Image (cartoon, rainbow, N blue to C red; front, side, top):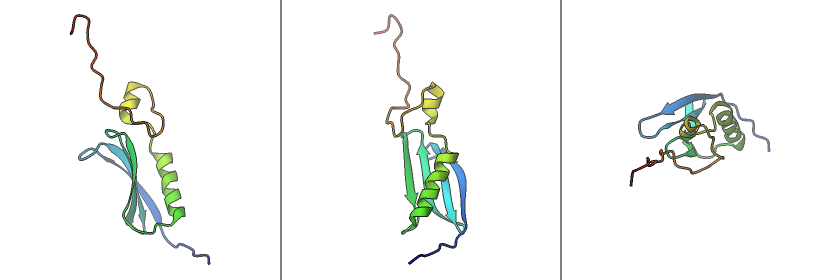
Length: 104
């Protein structure tokens, strides 16, 4: 049985710097947010949050395509340091403390 989905898919690119620090896409169907895909630059994670059960696979795949197209893969901390991480790398964003000659 072939079900055809009749919906209007839209998205918003949104950043968050209050409770977390990063950028992502919010996916809407008929003006209802159903998915958020977020790159957290502090935690160095990429997460998907679903706000509705039973999201069709084609909508999830399109949401991931939009995220990959619109959101840079590199974490901000790594981009500032000039070296991009491998996908899903867990390296720390914190600056290393370097000792100067004469410091103990």
